[in-house]
Length: 403
Image: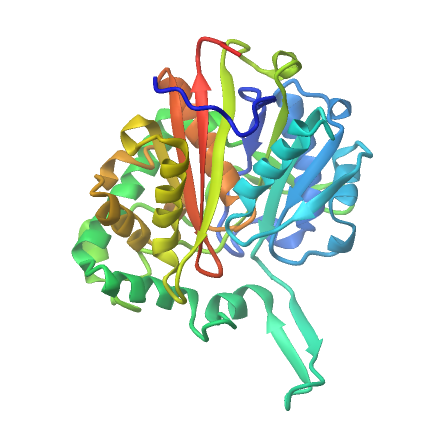
C-alpha cells in the first residue's frame, strides 16, 4: 500500500464504535413527531452502549445538524444531557457537508489535546421542518416567512436558482445523457438492496424506538422507509424535471441520526471492537465551484485532495459519496474517466435519503466497514453541499494494527 502521512497523526477512529439510525423518508415514521435533538442524544447512548462505550468515557461532544429544532440554542450541552452525560461541546453545520465536517472537527480537538475522547453526533429531521418569520427593515417586504427545508432547497439567495437546477445545468455543461443517469440510479438501487439483503447494513444501522414525552413507545425506526425497488423501464419513462433529472434520479427528504467516537492512538484500544484494526484520517479538503454548478464541485475537491496527498483513485479500496443527484456520479465518472460501477458498493444517499446532517457520517461508517471487509486500504469520501461546495476526505484502514 502506498504510504501517506495523516494530517492528524495522533488521532484514531476506534473500529465499530459507530452506528446510525435508519433514514425514514419525510413524514413516514414516528420521528416526524419528536424533538430530533433529544432523540439523537438518547439514541447515541443506546448505540454506544451496544458498542461497549460508556457515556462517561467521552469528554467532549461535537453535534451537527442543519434544520432548526426546538431548543437548538442550547445545542451540544443539551444533547449531551439527553444522552445522559453532562459534558461540554459545540455545534456545527454546513449543509450536506456537516456529517464529514463533524468528524474532522472532533479529530482536530483530539489532535490539539483539547479532548481525549470526542463524541460525534449528527442528525436532522426534515419532517415538519419549522417556518421562521424574519423582520426585514431594509426591504419592501417587512416580514418574511421562510419554510426552512423547502424554501432553501427551492431558492439559492446567491444565484436565484434551486438545488435541482444545479443538476440540470451541470448535466448540460458536461453533455450527460439521461440514459446514463437512469442507469446509474437503477444500479445504485441494486447496490443498496444487495447490501441490505446480505446483512452488511446491520453492522451500521441500529433499529431504534421512538418515545413520546411520557416515555411510551410511539414506534420503531427499523428501515429506510420510502426506499423501493425500481425498474429501468420505470426510470426511462419518468418525466424530466430538468436536464437528466427525474423523481427517480434524485434523493428524497428524510430523518435520522448517526454517531461515532474519535480518540487518540494511546486510548484507541480501550474502545475498538477489533483492536488490530487501525483507522486514521489522512486528509480533508473543500472546493467551491462557479454559481449553480454544485454537482461538479465534489470532483474538483477530489482532484485537490489527490494532488495534495499524492494518491490516485487506483490507490482507493473504497470510493463512496453523497450524491443527491445521479448526475453527480455521471459527472465524476466523466471528469476522472472513472467507472462509476466501482463506487458506492453498499448503497448511497441517492437511494436511502437525505437528512443533511448525518448523511456523510453514515456514508463514512459504511465505507470504513467495507474497507475492513476488503482487508484495509485507503477510503475516499466526498460529496456536495449548498453554495456550490464540494468536500472530500481520505481515511486509511489498516488491518494489521500498525500504529
